[in-house]
Image (cartoon, rainbow, N blue to C red; front, side):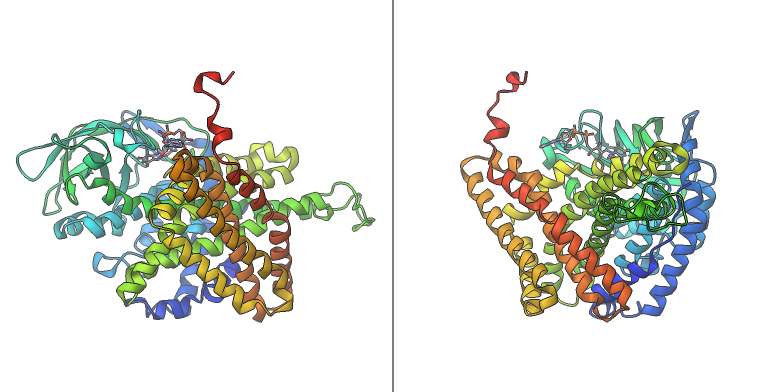
Length: 592
Ligand SMILES: Cc1cc2nc3c(=O)[nH]c(=O)nc-3n(C[C@H](O)[C@H](O)[C@H](O)COP(=O)(O)OP(=O)(O)OC[C@H]3O[C@@H](n4cnc5c(N)ncnc54)[C@H](O)[C@@H]3O)c2cc1C
């Protein structure tokens, strides 16, 4: 069975030393009380809950999966009880505003706990996952009565939320969606249509489920400008918050899938179900994006959580498993063979994981700290700046961490050799679970288009400029330090090349729109490698005051990253410079 211990030291190091969270919180309205002592206690307790309650259900949940019986979904054994403990422990409302019944802690603290949940049991974590997203939409575009009636029970954990976008003929392209919403003559609507792949669309954990459904009003314009968002409860709820009869909706079936088998992925049929419009008519996509942006960061954290668990197990195995002798002579002459960890190739895989996890964690937490800053900074300028930078970093966090999760779970499995392929060790489950993270909440391809198209070119590079300026200032600050010079020089060069590549793509796109799509994937990876390089170096700098072993580990990590991972960016730069001709010149019919 695979093991999990929350990496509290690393988590605290990133939060308090790298990101200086305490001084950052002091600048936010309402976060002044988020003291280090309080956060430490929350993290300790989060570690206990995830290690002792959720982690033991990970493999059993995978083996058992969900069941669909007579239109009802039953989650794997123990999941419901764990959810009750989660709610009783106040975890569900950890970061929600106090006025909605939450504890009002910063989102970044919630992110650390969420990483633990995702390491411990990714499938289980998908049940409360979209409640958080629903909270964002309700908080921002819900009316006061909708917040009172729907938001409070969701924050409390009495009800969960879902996000119903996808239909059988439309996933990435939501402009194609067909689900209809007819005004009922009062303040309600009748929703009719079928949604597929709905995470936690039905389950046995709560008395009600609140679906946030994208649908079209009768007179809606075509495409994405004609989509509205509706609150559609499983059990009807009136304006006073009183539950009534079952709504005209149901789970038609659940999917049998590659991974996250303990997470119910549902076909949801709406047959004239009663719903309430949330936000303005035909502005549903913008309202849904509030939920989706939070969910994209959350999926990035899923990638991080999986990598961490895979890495912990791979490291332990590499230390225990005896196989072959070190090329420089026996390291354990008392044993029949040396442990795997003496071999350079095993170290390559271990270091790759460690380097990607550590830089990825710092980047992800930073992005989620920006969520707090975008909402609670004291000045409009600071809020706006945080929002722009967050928008820019979101596709990098989502796609970067999930793609690397797949790579790292692959390395971890490989370190286990044949045992990595065998169920009881739990490593193949991590690889299977990781696969979905590059798909849902927008595939890597869609994140890539979002980054170069919407976040960079459409906004005249506003987020990129902010980030590049920050990196340049950091490089200038540390340029004179001989111990850092090789890293600072490489980071400054890569950042300059990033700007040059961006300009080149923008210029090429003026003549040929395919230049954007042709560069998108490589641009996303180039950006990710540079962003990770920056955080790898920041980890090293922040380690200066820590003990010698910790510093030495950070130095080795940063050196590995700069010498063996950052050079991958060069290949992506070459691919970008090659243009889109090599992708587009062959006619569709000529693929033979
Ligand atoms: C387990 C699971 C859980 C899910 N949970 C939810 C949920 O809770 N709610 C929900 O609404 N949906 C959910 N989804 C749906 C998920 O978000 C979609 O599957 C995903 O967005 C991709 O859509 P699609 O499957 O229709 O693929 P398509 O959109 O058909 O894409 C197919 C391929 O084409 C690429 N592609 C598409 N358009 C373009 C383009 N313009 N340019 C370049 N490449 C493009 C994509 O990147 C992808 O590689 C879930 C899916 C799964 C499998």
